[in-house]
Image (cartoon, rainbow, N blue to C red):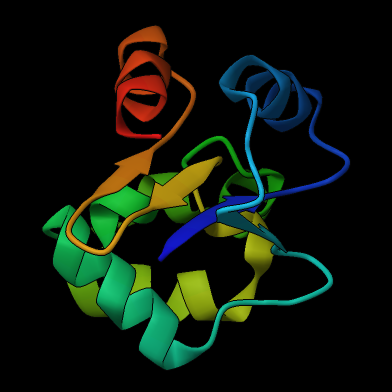
Length: 115
């Protein structure tokens, strides 16, 4: 199963979706309208190697909550990922055995190869 996690108001996510030419074999999951469950966050973190790998420091919530001045633990990253959708680094492409996170050019190329 392939799942593409994105935010519909994010122009970068929209651009990458078009670039990937996502087919019907990929499930699209809009994270604001359908937030991730604790189990889903745990599974993504397991594939990514950590909760921190999923965490976006570009979120406006990150600055608003003063998190940049705190030493966050894996438990903290998990907590914030579950608390607000904007903490998830986007987009995320989940495959049965791998996960690709973010919008870096190299990651997008890896997504293309994986799809």
